[in-house]
Length: 471
Image 1 (cartoon, rainbow, N blue to C red):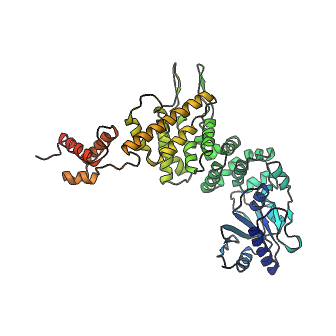
Image 2 (image 1 turned 180 degrees about the vertical axis):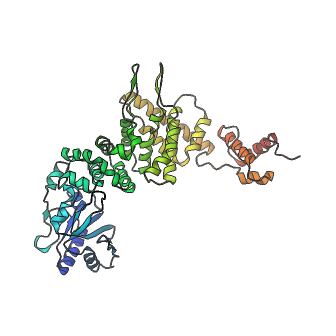
Image 3 (image 1 turned 90 degrees about the horizontal axis):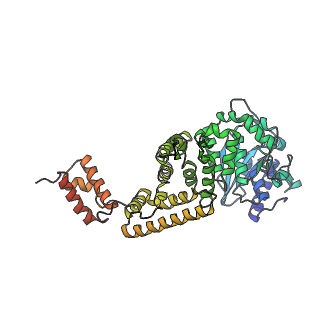
């Protein structure tokens, strides 16, 4: 073969080659598998295109394995899939496509290998390897995709305007591949994205968000996020992020460009975690700065309360982008709302009560919060960065001490609302909530210990003050 394949991959490809020969249909490995093998990236799936019926070929291939894998097929799209161990193999018949202006769903008809390579989005994804007896393993590269891989370049096989007008999602995919592979988009191709950016409006939000999340999962997400901004696509798909861009000066006072600061924070956190939702928290941590920006004479720019306003924006942004409205969203909101708290605890003489409240409010997510806070340090002043990191380490130590002493993280109150209702024979009501909150505040303030006996004594005393004890 022209590329290095593992024994398992060669074993599977030989099975496919023999099945295709039995049916008399030419077949090829195409697209991402070929690209990633040449780049030395890990592969977990392969696309097989045949000049014939892909579903029939998939069934024929499945028969050659013991145990026989299940064939998942979709007649409407003419595609089929089998799983061999942890490897997914998809089969489709070669086709040519034509598009109508207001839809990214193509009209499809059977074609040959050249037709199929013509319809591919980028030259690096149009590479194919023959699985046919006469030239098994031969690389077929009609658009110089190999050269583009060597030059780290994203180009389209055909005219980019036609490529992006036909399927505008390819604009997002171009930026996603540039971000994932750290490639450059060919200047005429990038200009074509700028020219066609309005076409993105015909793409479903789900598909846009899926590509956006893949960009966010890159090793260095700022590459893709900046390309989205420079191309104009971000102005359409995520205008709140664009609002962060730029710096304003009044009377010699200026503020940093919060868009590029945010990109750096996302890159910083990405060096420490693959968690998509922590990357989202980094992306949105300052999202409300434009809404809270004020100039105070003699003092400069302020963004008071941007963490609170930002927290309120998170559910709306997630809803608009069709992101989950579950615990993932609640985690992002919590981290946005709390991201300034650890900074306020880096001052001297911080009370155990303040530390206790942070542990209580952040719960299981305290380590994620500290990761976000450390990622938020983007100063070019090395001494300043060192001082901030040392201060955060001090906060971590204080949290550890208080947690060992008070067991506040994931805290469950020693007295529940149900217990209060039972002791005082009360229905669900405001006095029950008031009493429960008073007990919680007393524990967090260190007024009483975090145990049942202390909480019960405090409850009886507080209940007497509230007139809940019947004589």
